[in-house]
Length: 174
Image (tube, rainbow, N blue to C red; front, side, top):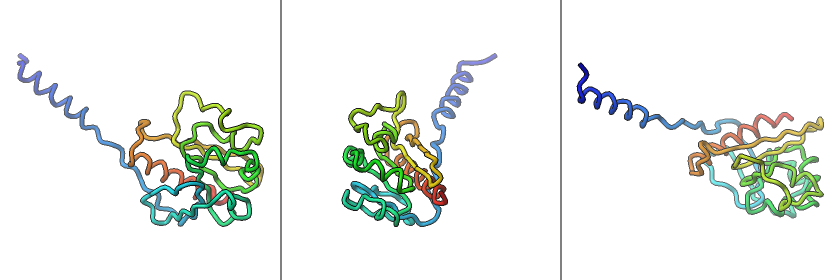
């Protein structure tokens, strides 16, 4: 006959097992060295092989951006980066662009007629970053980067940057 003590013991074990489910182990980017231009303040990351160079909007042109593997547009620079005079840079540079803190996709940046304020949010999602790459063979690629469990903390942010670095490395042949 089952006693109250046995039921309590089994229930305690179930709660212990379920309550102690492990957090995922995030892998740090360990690929090739990358040089990334940053409009705004460069993020702090753990990857030593990633070199960030903060640039100004005066340096934000096709010729200057050729020396970088990618461009990060930080949240504080999104509004300026979406101004119409920069729209052609995103399609003519053939480098991946990452828009940190942007949940509006690439359209406010690539469409000179669309302002950042008028662009619509991506419905039903809250992404930490979005990306855009216009390849030399006229292909457009976009990406969205969400935080694990939609929780904004240092570990989850680091994991998103590691995924973005992987994307940069994979797109280097395009």
